[in-house]
Image (cartoon, rainbow, N blue to C red):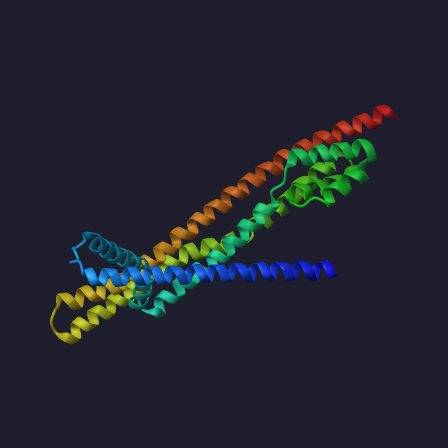
Amino acid sequence: MKKLFALIFVMSFLAFGQANVLLAQDAAEDTTAMAEDSTMMEEEPEPEPEPAPVQEAQSGADLMAGSGDEQSFHQAVKEKFIEGDWKFMTPVLLCLILGLAIAIERIITLNLATTNSKKLLAKVEDALNTGGVDAALDVTRNTRGPVASIFTQGLMRMTEGIDMVEKSIISYGSVEMGRLEKGLVWISLFISIAPMLGFMGTVIGMIGAFDAIEAAGDISPSLVAGGIKIALLTTVAGLIVAIILQLFYNYCVSKIDGLVNEMEDASIALVDLLVKHKLTTASNN
């Protein structure tokens, strides 16, 4: 403890001394700068115009203009949302939010369901050779994904024969496919309903524009153009939502197709493996 306190004291002393040295240097520099300023004030040289500050000012103005453009994007979206009438734009926005939520949940689930079927088959084969069907069941039950679930159902019917194993794999494969496709129908619904809501808002907006023309008793270009622009904003919003959700929907469908093909290939390989294991066990007996 004494050594620690001594070390802290020495470090504090050194730091204090260094601070005094720096303060002294700063004071000397300030004195020198004041002397130079007084000398320059006595000489009073005529200032010459320099173009550099003008360029810097111009570049600063350009930067401000660029930042304004970046900030105006969100403001423009907000203004278009308000111009399109919140009563029609809000359902379109809800379609986008709900559709994206379901699509993201499906993407995460499908990525977690992906399994290395070749590695799983190798583990199942090793377990069958060493510990039999029970050991293979332990491997498949501790593995996540639809392929492992199908393997589990097939191994549980191993005592009933290869035919029952195949039937069990086919039946449970349909169940797993239904689980993978869960939620896609809602994404498809939002893809279809978002443009419809946009078209409905457009039609109602056009009716309002014609009502305004009828009330005015004259066709004013500004009145017609403004009404049509506001009416078409809902259609644009609906089409944008449908395009975004369609991209996510196609990704989910392609991911499901890949998983289904993987399940079919792995199921065939499992049946061949079980037949091979049964023949080997029968020959050994």
